[in-house]
Image 1 (tube, rainbow, N blue to C red):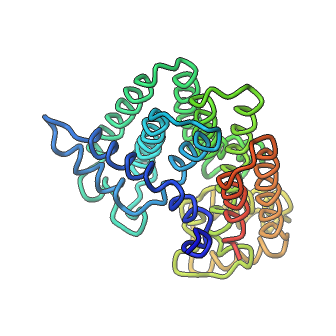
Image 2 (image 1 turned 30 degrees about the vertical axis):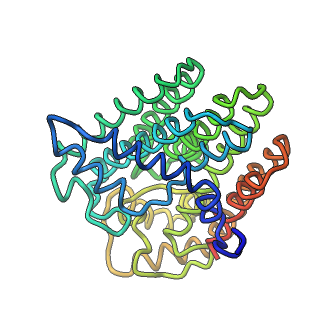
Length: 333
């Protein structure tokens, strides 16, 4: 049975193709999240790391390195580094957002407490820096440390922009580039660096990661409104309830008449949300066509990601990475 027959989704095909590398990364993660003196660290970390995430970000590092012909072991350390950075940000995000569910399970801050989540997140950041230093590459250290700073900057920007209906599209793009695309970009870029590729290949990998990350986050933001069709489901509207300004809302507010603007001011800025407001908000997004526009924006960034891969060698992994870019938007259907 071929990989295509065994797993139809691009991330499943990537996982199957990189099975040995992923197994080694998972073993490395379990080893490095251990703590001799603070057993709560592996307890909290394991709750999130082993919660069934798709490991998209570390897979991108592995795929980029293998695509570039890398045959060493350091790409596995970098993949674990990327996963630790991602997990640390999730632990911190759940505290900031006062979240209670993550990947269908109670969040660490709910099961333990905020202090544990913040401190274990700090521990994982420290572990990530230890791992990246072990590769001996200052360029890798520069890329991943910059990404960690940009992620934090994006989260702070999102915090300051939240509940402000004057938030612009430029601010939104800066937020999602920070909170999501920065790590996608770095994950791909370091795969090329560790494989000692020329600048044009490394730049192409970085462009792929940036486009993929933006498309991924825009698609997630659209899914929160029920996808491009805007079908209300049991998990729809979390961003609205949390008063987050995502692209469909920002554009609807920009085109709002006086009455619509009063609605957004009441529900988003003042937080006075009543029964039926979610449906009203969704109706305004449909009226102004911002759901379809957001999907088109996501598709454009996914296409940009796929186009960047043309500079890379012909390889089954390149095809899977291209298909992944299409899939992050196709899942909106």
